[in-house]
Image 1: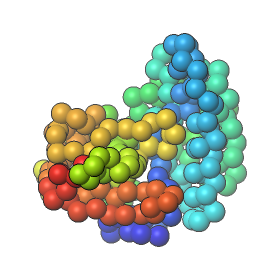
Image 2: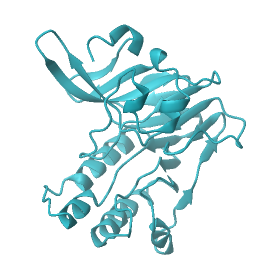
Image 3: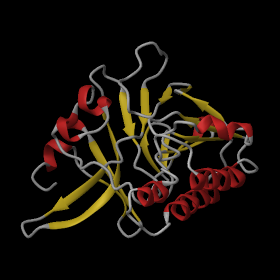
Length: 249
């Protein structure tokens, strides 16, 4: 496994990281139930989201043996309810996870409304943030919490980052990626790619206006951000900082 920063490893070519010291496996933005929401708007798409999430989870658990499994927000997709398909898909994921990992934690994301209903049937935790030693895990839809100390690396999702690489002819491909860099306060951050198959995400660039997360908009030093592509064919590929590749992205 390749280390993103000290103690934080990418699990194979998956949108998942492992904090070895804490035996914690972390993913973000599964957006289960996405197809149900789209169908309610008259858009029919193949029901692939759960399959993708289960594939990532199973492959990750074959490679590492965590004691803690963290979903860094947006486990579900619908804003205004807990949908029927959401309930079924969340139940299937938790039924698989809980016998294999003793502690499952969901960081509350902006899509995770009504998720607490599922805790009546499954013993998992929902929290607003999680500090593991010097790591702080949040979803990323809010600014950096100022009332939490003791951390030096911030881990978050929400952004669904992807990078489009171009040449003089045109686009060579769009790839999901991790982002690693520095915050204005000198601390380190890592942005997680989305696990959800349909969450292709925000285009990585030097423009603050193009990002969703207020952390990237307000607190990241974008010129120093390093994208790390993950792709089944390309593998894991660390690119130079954004300031050096702005002409090809």
